[in-house]
Image (tube, helix red, strand yellow):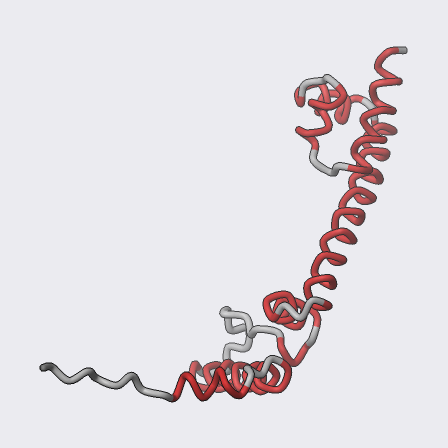
Length: 146
């Protein structure tokens, strides 16, 4: 009967924290015990898989809200990350060439085109203040030796 209550607690914790070793420690069982239960109790295994999925979705939602918060704070790193993962025009091309007929030159052209599109986007949305650009262009003057 004690195992049933520990298994139930395990499932509840796994929904919040989808990391097996952390949950094992929280409920006071070894990982060996967990894996033995997984092999012996198919109903438990199904509940674990379901709880793990729920926990992963919870963490993903939390992480995604952090990314969106970064975008709202106008952090270019979060914006680049979001676009690279979610927007087809800003995705980085894969290094592995899937099309065997595609030459290295064609692949390099696609990479260059993607970089140009990203640069245009950055220039449009993340412009530096005018005085900052002018300061860059000013060359330091050399001091004359006396």
